[in-house]
Length: 115
Length: 114
Image (tube, rainbow over all chains, first blue to last red; front, side, top):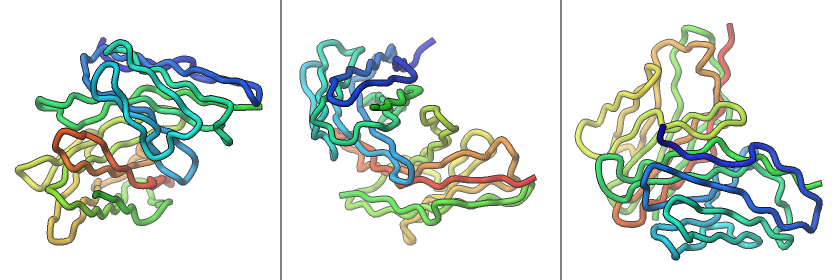
């Protein structure tokens, strides 16, 4: 079954700790994305990557970091510099060519709560 | 640059009534338009998309949307609401090209009353 997996589903961390959210896809998509979702604010783009070993900042990159060492994987680290990290985090991927061009496929999300 | 406005953060309809969720966009290039649905604590699922061609687009679960260039709109409709349609709906626009990024509206939460 092709798709996107995110783990864990729920994550609790103490303030001041870095935490890494996992995102894996087996759709052979070139592009991957991280979004943050807060109630009433829609989806805000944190980082995206269109090719291995390259990524770009989105609208709210401060306090976050990513890596893209493999095509299938795009982990997101929420650092202690992120002032308000409690949120629902969504990972997505898309093909940059073909019939599903630009359509983004989403993972199930990770709900991060910082105590 | 692209942007999306969804009119109404909450919409409530009775079961069996028409569902109409509004989306207006701005785009400096021919847009690609999408509607996604999100159930609580889940990811987003694509309902339908417009890229080129026929302006009336049919999607899953009986939803459809019409691209109206003159009105810069892409409203989502369903003739008869079902309880299972209760969810949050997001409209998104992309400018196409090599970038592939979607710009999302803030979402509309649909409630369905029995």
